[in-house]
Every structure is written in C-alpha cells, then in structure tokens.
Length: 373
Ligand SMILES: NC(=O)c1ccc[n+]([C@@H]2O[C@H](COP(=O)([O-])OP(=O)(O)OC[C@H]3O[C@@H](n4cnc5c(N)ncnc54)[C@H](O)[C@@H]3O)[C@@H](O)[C@H]2O)c1
Image (tube, rainbow, N blue to C red; front, side, top):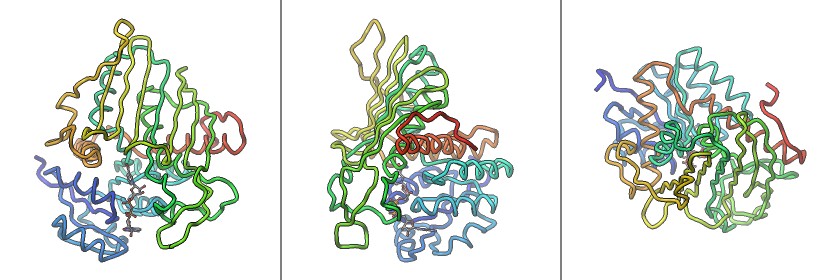
C-alpha cells in the first residue's frame, strides 16, 4: 500500500458514474473519493449518500482547483468534456475522461501536450480495452499466437435505441440537421477503433465509410413528442493500416442484440482470435481461438490474473470492465514512469479516424491519414 492515498473527485452523478466509475474507484484501497459534483446538486447529494462519499457539490470550478485533489474523473455529457478536462489539466490534476475529449482530434492533442508538459497522466474511458478477455487476447497477440496479422474486424452494436420512444439526450442532437450528424460512429465507434490500432499495432492509414440514419424521428429528454433527428444510428467503414493489415468496423445502436455488443476479431498467418463482449445468458464475454491445424474455434478460459479483485465472468460488464480500467490508471499514477495506455494521444488518434470516416462519407471517397494538423 502507498503511504498516501490518491484523492479523486468525480464530476457527473449520472448513470455511468453510478454503474462504472464510482464502483471502480471504491474497489481500490489505494484511493479515496473525496467529492462528487453534479450541476444538479440533488443528484450529487443523493449519489454521494448512496456511496457514502464525504462531500457533494455543484461547483466544479472550486472542486477542480482544490489543492488536496489529485485526480479529476469526468463522467459528464460529451459536450462538457473538453472544458472540464482543460480546466483540470490547467489545475495540475491527472484526468480520467469519458470519450470523446473533443469532436476535433486536434483539440485533444493540444490537451495531451499540455498534460505531458506538466507530468500529468490522462486516460480515456475506453472501457473495452480493459475487459479480461481483450487483455488476455492482447497478451496472446504479443506472444505471437496470431503470427503476422492480416485482417481486423470490429463491431459495437446493440438495439439500445431501436425504439424511437427511447429518448436520447439533447447533447446528442446537433443544431444542424441539414446533413447527417456523427453519433454512433463517435459514441460506439471509439472503443472498437481503439482496439483495432492497439491489436494490429499500427495506425489507420486510409479509410472509406458510410453513415446512415435509420430512425428519422425520436424522443428527446425534456420533450413529449417525436423530434426529427438526422443522426448516424448505423455506419460501416473499411480501413487500411500502416503495416499492411486491412480491416472493417461496424457500429450501430439500432441493430438487434444485447449490450454492449462489442466484438473484435483478428486473423493472422498463425492463428485467429474472436473476443465477443456481449452479455448473454449471464456471462459478460467470451474469447475463442483457432489455428490453421485446428480451424474450429474453441472457447478459452480467461486466466484469473486478468480479472479485477473479486471479479468474475458473471459480474455485470459495466463494473467488471471498468474496474480494470481504473485499477490500471491508479497503477500508472503510482508507478510515475512513462506507462500510460489509452491516454489522450490514443484518444486523439481514434478521434482522427472518426473525423476521417466522416469526411469520407461526406465526400464519398477514401481519406488518407494522418489528417492535416
Ligand atoms: N465508456 C463507456 O463505455 C460509456 C458508457 C456509458 C456512458 N459513457 C459516457 O459517460 C458520460 C456520462 O454518461 P451518463 O449516461 O452517466 O450521462 P447522464 O446524463 O446520466 O449523467 C451526466 C451527469 O453529468 C452532469 N453534469 C453536466 N455538466 C456537468 C458539469 N460541468 N459538472 C458536473 N456535472 C455535470 C449532469 O447533470 C448529469 O447528471 C457520457 O459522456 C457518456 O457518453 C461511457
């Protein structure tokens, strides 16, 4: 145990803080959650009481500038991430932030450089990089199980919003409805795009993709009637990576299937791995592998060392996967060295791919990366 506990302040007392972030911090004895902030004070008070946290506030500016806080955890709507992360880094705090930090990857890169110049660590909420199965798969890839990789396929899809009566947040609806707006590609694409470049071990070098709006009217929180919504609720792109690997990514929140609906597949000259992170029949994920002399995919048991303390395959994916993410961030901060996976640089690289696919769709052409800085 370190001599001094890490002091964390959480911004946002909504669903994801409740199900993933706060349980993740509280699971680690090296941490003290000192305050929970929400601009809706009653929400902060209620959740702080439920988790037995010492303080609830609606004043994020004062909280971020407090001397006795080491880490700011941002679990607020996406249109607030950049402002809050920027303020936290300015104030000298390590930052865990839900994705995206900003819609334009260049702004994330600027924040990343600022954090690095101050010796601060950053982490994006790339939940699925940290599942026990994905971590195990990465260790198999690093040990040569796949050999030379050929093809990566990624999916994040489920039917969370297939029913137009299920409301979306206003922050997910852009003002300009004259052309289709990026929603699923960013919200659901980010984690699987991240796994792609991490497993393949190369940057995306060229992409071509399309976005589609399948459900044209939806309910929005705070309104009692259907509202026209020209948003991407399904998209597909194909990609080339800088090392010659090719790939495809499909995301949607109107495709039938259970949460979270993530699947990552990699095929190489020595083996193939399929990680299926779809909560089905009480199990959070499965990992299957095949080799050229044993082509029927077999399920592997994920070794215990990839699970967070007290974790099991039957735990909810939300708390199970996030506990690994948070533990890794705490390890990285206490280690103090350069290790910092899934950070704002990775977030910017993922956002750059999203920006490139959007451009490809709008201009109906392949787009090469990197984009202009
Ligand atoms: N990584 C993942 O797998 C994953 C899963 C679900 C949600 N998320 C992300 O988590 C974030 C929160 O999602 P949610 O479902 O909890 O939303 P939510 O709407 O339930 O909660 C967000 C809360 O933030 C509060 N808030 C807004 N501005 C604030 C500010 N400046 N300071 C403090 N609080 C503020 C709101 O009042 C609200 O209570 C979103 O960015 C979402 O995309 C990520």
